[in-house]
Image (tube, rainbow, N blue to C red; front, side, top):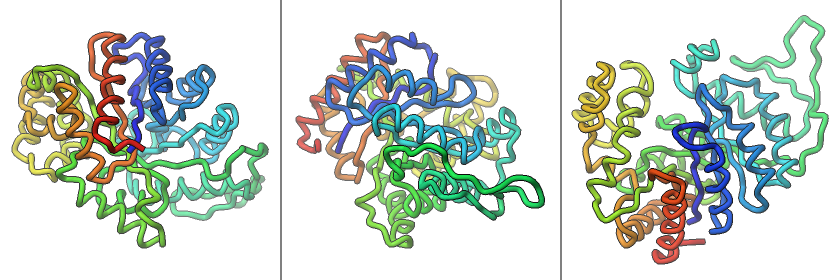
Amino acid sequence: MRLGLSLGYWGSGTDPADHLVAAREAERLGYSVVWAAEAYGSDSVTILSWLAAQTERIDVGSAVMQIPARAATMTAMTAASLDTLSDGRFRLGLGVSGPQVSEGWYGVGFAKPLGRTREYVDVVKAALRRERVSYDGKHITLPLPNGPGKALQLAIRPPRQDIPIYLAVIGPKNLELAGEVADGWLGIFFAPEYAGEQLARVKAGADRAGRDLASIDVVPTVPVVIGDDVDGCADAVRAYSALYIGGMGSREQNFYNRLAVSMGYEEAAVKVQDLYLAGKYREAAAAVPFEFIDRTCLLGPAPRVTERLAAYAEAGVTTLSVAPYAPDVESRLETLRVAADALDAAGVGE
């Protein structure tokens, strides 16, 4: 198992310069990749370009570039450019986001996300192979019929035509799609105790495509809080858990809430959502069960983190993305160091 660094969203309570400091420390420690996210604030591409220009060895990855934000061919152009400028260090993470962002921010309908993702990946791959892109799908048509458009070929030659593609997905059919068409799966709220069903879905998709599950990079983002008081460590990520379970989507369409339900936390998931949507954010955070947080995060002193890292590796994780939750940059850097030492102590590092 390798380690990655998840920076999350730009400007989320962190000085932008601190992200670069963290990325450079992760590179020094031997982390394999640094990921940047986007929602409706900063974009991931600008951040990754900035980081790639000021690092040398660590991969840079989008977690994610939002599918409704860009035409598939534009994403291929961006991936080719970033991979070229970073000397082959780019990883392309994609996700459909959610209905509120897709329709409210981008004006793109959210219906049929599975089919849209499949066609999007098809077009991205074809463009990176430098084929003349012609596609007649239910969601993407290139070129448009009965007009002046013609099938075009990517005008630059990226160093790799097989830039790794990752899918950030949650639902069963989407997990199968990741196994079928992607090089990796970007997970969230991943708990080793519940990983079997999720990875079985990824494997089903891989089997259908004649692929080996071992060829797919399993990459959960895991909040990490180091300290002697485990309950206090859990409190540091309560607001994050409540935001996703309670407020990341509508009452009818919140995929993270459904995930918590599928993990056996139905009563708590309903309560957290009710409180969050009522504007009672502190109460919602307090209602997230400690057990849920403990199973989906790395909490406590180094020996406890070591033990849990071994459990993640045994569950099938191949790259664990550390998301440090700490009050200042020095504490976040120390979190990265503790995680690296814990990986060595667990004896599961690559």
